[in-house]
Length: 128
Image (cartoon, rainbow, N blue to C red; front, side, top):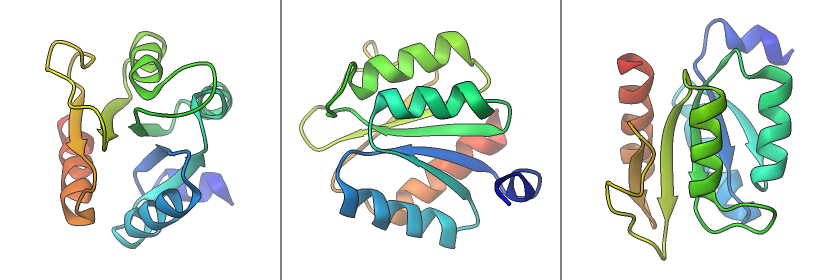
């Protein structure tokens, strides 16, 4: 069933360690017409990408997460290994400068408005 979505709906990999935030963001993105894959940390996200990176179009990740790497490190890793995936990075505690974001990466501060996130992801999908 997962692959049936991949051809008609843009696929977003959502990486967020807070379950309620992840659930709400996933619901908002699904309501906007995206197929959402969820991961609680960078390690899970990398495992997802290793199994199906070809159809993921956008990585939407929080910066602060438990595990082997934070969201900025994850975004750098994804950019190097899967350059076709667009990057949207979020945090309530950090405001990374453009120099610390991966090339073509975008940042949205928390708390974010779901409409803003949806628009950012739509822009990333259409510009890539």
